[in-house]
Length: 277
Image (cartoon, rainbow, N blue to C red; front, side, top):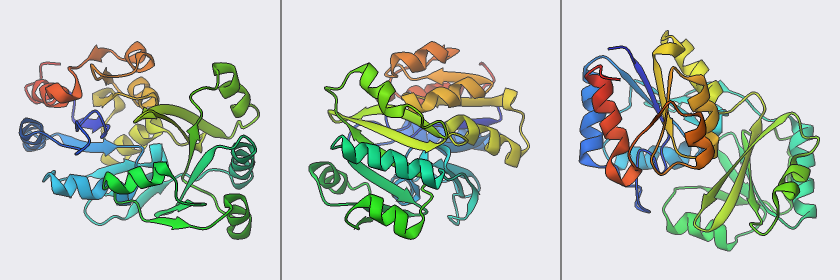
């Protein structure tokens, strides 16, 4: 089997619908791939507390493998939750970013270690709770003051972007923050800008996982749908975009899979297991 490591995004890639459903065919395809000697890993923008429950709920057995979280900020052992790799954002850059977001009246979410900090409850955070994403949110008031007091180096910062702003506004917002990496995705009508260290990213997750598992990147598949998957698809041996992927993701992919609600990941896994890719 040529492709011995399969790295999959989670939301709108491995799963579908707001129930975060993983189909039986997909589950079977994962197990068959692993039984054939492949290693199946997850790389997600979610953090550990948010990704572990849905995987367990749908019976995806990853106990001997790795889960990349926070867009490359952390890699965990799936069975124990042990952090085996971490890459935190620079403190001063993170502080400058949050100040800039506040100056523009933007909502900020802060991810430090295994904790999720907000300044107050909003309609967005209520949606997180309603969708059972298992985010243990802690209200701490002004996040600038919190970051200064605790000298935080976050794994990830989430900014709820104003969809009425222009592309130039976005470029201006990122201006000068060269130690940080920015990706943007749409979630239920909201635009989320996810910010990590420039040395994080899902592409770096692939590099680190392949190194830990002693598998050449050339023998690795990466599959995803969002802006944060571009670096993953660009780094692995075979980058695959979902049929429902954003245009910039399809532009860097070597192959396009079917949509997430048409079991696109399962079909690619079946081809990989049969060594037909």
